[in-house]
Image (cartoon, rainbow, N blue to C red; front, side, top):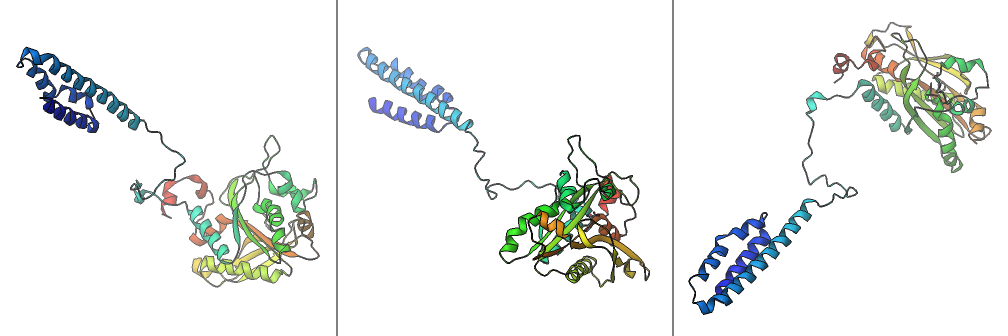
Length: 336
Ligand code: PHE
């Protein structure tokens, strides 16, 4: 008799330990059968048997409580938000790719950055809020100089400036690069990003647009190297040989300063002698080098900067600059 009870007890305990609804097992037929046996026993045996069955019942109830606690613990197991995500453990849930596309400016900017990084330039994003020092002071704009007005800068109430050109990054690039020069190397960096001007908006003017800036410094940098670098860039970007030309241009942070133009290629409707001004450039002014701690009697540099939209408009024959910031899907889908 005791043997039967032990067997039933073991069977039920292991069923409880593995069940997700352990309390159900207390209602099992095996347990009820054990009670119904009592009535069939000799009166002298009943007390001992009843006691044994009660012990089994208590053991099973304890097991149910323990199992329920175990299940509750598993259900609220805390998530370790610092754990690395195993990308192989689950199938990524992909968006339907046929509805997505990159903005044409993003795509073209990537192309511009790629060309310059292949030429050995480090690429850094420009800031979208800056100060008077980086916008003007570090770039050799004297206080109250009329050249400051040429930039139509916005200003926050606190006096900060959403940069009106990517040249605001020049001082940082030069200062950070000083150690490279001292170690016998060169500074070669481009900076790209959004710039802001308080302009009346029309087909060729926007208050918000993109620029890309280049800065190069070495012991023997020349204007010729700069023109070679720029020509190579434009020829790779447009995928063909180009004629280039420069004319004097005034920017307080370069001397000499130049405006750089390319002849509009026939393949995109250009006529001979049709020149397009693409950017401003020149040899970095000694005052700008000095301000960043670079000795202008030892090192020379060149810099350039120009709008990205203009490049893209010429490449694809886009007639209105305002399309880029318009969010018009009809326009964007042409580049998908
Ligand atoms: N920052 C100038 C502009 O936006 C362009 C420029 C950059 C000119 C670097 C010379 C050197 O008009």
